[in-house]
Length: 286
Image (tube, rainbow, N blue to C red; front, side, top):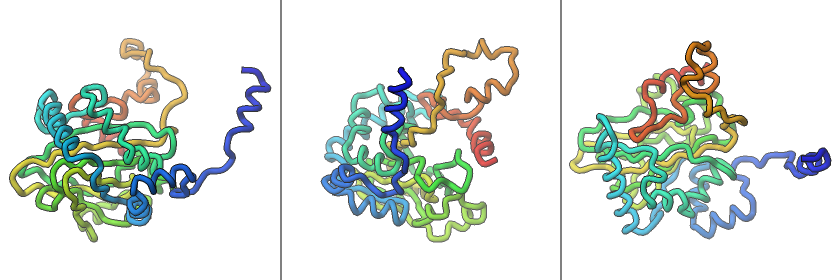
C-alpha cells in the first residue's frame, strides 16, 4: 500500500469512542423495530434482561431436540449433559447466531465486529447443583473496562423457575466493575431468579454477578449458552502453524506467549480444558 493510501486510510479512522449505550441512529432504529428498547434499558440499568418470543415455539422445540442429540455425541463423562463447538455441527445453530434480536443485542453490548466466543448446550437434570456467583469477565482484572467486553445469552428451552434451576442474578452489580468477593459469593445478598417461559433469551453483561439455582424438580433444563466478545481481544499475527513438535525442547515461556497454557481457544466437543481454567483466571487477575 502506498504512503498516500496509508495516510488516506488513517484519515478515515474515527478519533473518538461512543459511550456505552450511545447507539448509532441505525442501530437504535433496529433495536426499536425489534421491540428491544426496554431490554436494552434493563441491560444498561440492571445488567441483565429476558427477551421473550425470541423465535417461534416450533423453532425452539427443534433446537432443544438438536441440543439433546449433540449432547449424546459428547465423549466422556459430559455425554448427555453438555455439547460444545456447535457451529457447523447442525444448520440450526447458524440460524441461532444470525437471529436478528441476537445480532442487535450483541452489537449494543460488544460493538460492531463482535466475535463469537462460545456455544455450549447445557442439560441440567433434577439434582443438578448450584453454580456459584461470578462475573463472566473472569479472565479480566478488575476494575473492568467501562465498555462491556463479554456478552452472554441463554436460549431458554424449558421454563425458567427457581426450582427448575434458573439463572440467579444480583441486579445492578455490574456497576461495581469487579469480581464478587468470597464473602459476597457466600452471602448472595440481593440474588433473584430470572424467571421466564421457554422460547426466551436470558441475557447479561460480563460484569454482573450471577450463577444459577440447583434444580429440585423432575425433568431437564435444556439451555444453549451463547457468548460473544469484542473484536480487539485477538493477536495481530497468527502462529497456529507452529505445532507442538516445534515447541519441543524450547523454553516454556514460548508456549505461554502463544496461548498454549491457558484454556482460551481450546474447546472440544465437551467444552473447554477445565484443568487450565483456574490457572487462566489466576493469571488474568495478577
